[in-house]
Image (cartoon, rainbow, N blue to C red; front, side):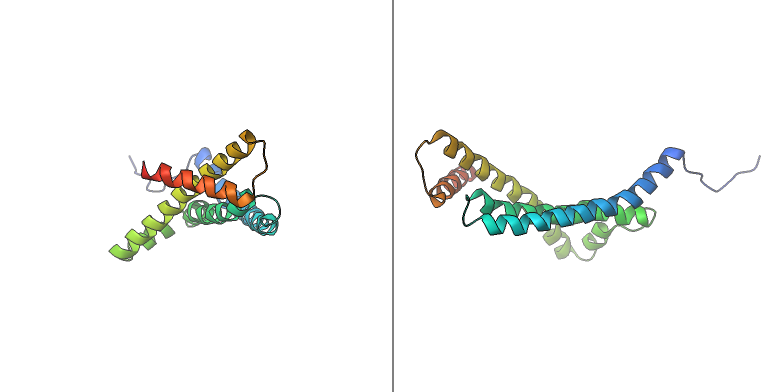
Length: 152
């Protein structure tokens, strides 16, 4: 009985490999263009419309970083047949780089969620209040609530 040392991937594995290699660059492209356009438009309207437009550029920027770290890393990994992982390369550089990289990535993910809570609170305050407030009043109230929420 002879032993064949070559591995023939299953059709599903071939499909997934080509799916990652072909589709993920488009996801990165459209995600980058969409987030950059959103940042520009939200910054333009943040002074005249409402303060939610002031929060959203930060969320778009954080989502762009998350897109590059997660989707970009997966794409590179599949492009090099699972032999190259950029995140792993960064993590093994040194102990301090590993800690800073992990801290910054998870901080970005957490801060995005806190900003979305502030947006939701501002929306709730605006919908419950029938009187007009300035946009800075809403932002101040939302951030005060988030500060109290963080302390609890």
